[in-house]
Length: 290
Length: 307
Image (cartoon, rainbow over all chains, first blue to last red; front, side):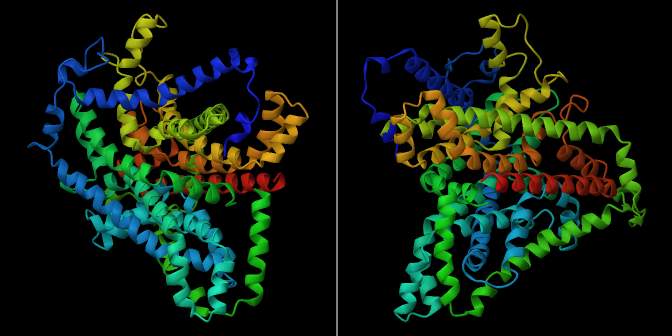
């Protein structure tokens, strides 16, 4: 993959100023990317007093777990927030992938007349500003009595999750060689068996990647939960962070950073779990997609 | 990219020829169409309708048709124009800076191999896995006047002589949010461009090397042309998602101080859900939708013209 550069014979010239500058730049980039994350972790172990010192301490002087323990405490139902987020985002990811995959297969392989317009509208839907749909969606959920419910939230998340999933699954299915299916067809297998036994295993990594992406997008979403959820206990984790920690007078930054860390962990796990197939999914979808 | 596309079309062609028609494969698209019609089609049409009405939820009266009234109001609404300008600055500023940084990093890390490349890549991708709301709070904390690490470091180094109120200053607030946004977005460009770089055929690089192309001419004449379409498409995706960015701005400044960080999303949200002026909010949404569509069409056309 990256053999090009090393295939050049290394001479004295290679250990040059240019090389030092290059490594310094990479080191700087690593610092820029990681320092804020480190700062969040470090602060989450600081006492309230230490977190707001005028001269910040790089390493917690008296590390404490109080901020994390405080999250499980009396005033705020953090477990409920966490649970709400996981359930609504997971449900969105699963539903989106289940509905999107057959559609993606159809758009990738079938040749019906509306195929073009439908693929094009799905792409357009992907671009819609969520806030434009917010008011009608709010009224829709109000009439369906789904406001302030996780089901309503999932409906909201579907507005961006589904078009995205169709588009991404289509790029994964496009990458499956048609010959594989044809060979099975010549062997006389019925079409539905080809779908289940041949195609499905091949697109499994794609399903996982797409699902994770939808999950991440839903996890990142703030505008739907703060609009559709009116009971505090039913909020998602990111929305609860915004609604609870922005006190008018002072913010408990240690607790805030502990809560932030807890909000980040599920996303990090999901992200790094699919990192490898993500490169493929995104590049085939985003690079070759248009 | 073009090679891949060509390959795909030659693969698709025989399928079209000898595919026996299996109607239910066509119908598999229906669940998606149905769901999208309800959750997107209906709201979009309803927005179009609402935009021609005077409708404030608080008035407790049903929407009243006023034709283009909302659109006339919009033209003379200075906050609309401010938020449009902020949206453009925020979106394009963030995307341009983070794509250039991502490009530079992709080129810099290209010569790394094996575990070194993998670990550097994984570490550089970390900000991508931080939820937007957390990005917002993290930077808000780091920007603090008292106890903010950014001010503390800048004071120590001597770049400033008193703490700067980053988010409370109407000239600095938008750039400060953009810095956080760039931090969160750069990994996306880095990842896509790294992958596109790795996809450049080896022969191209080798033959350029035999022609004794220097580092810079290699980058400008060989690599950049190959990266162009990846760069275009990834910028388009990020421009669209930045147009819609609500979480970072709302959690950092809620659009303030004044209207200095009010973007179209924030303004529409504020109109609809703090003022409950659904009619006017919808009109702004429609205008914005049209702008976005025009932009996407022009952009895609531009890509198709130089493949």
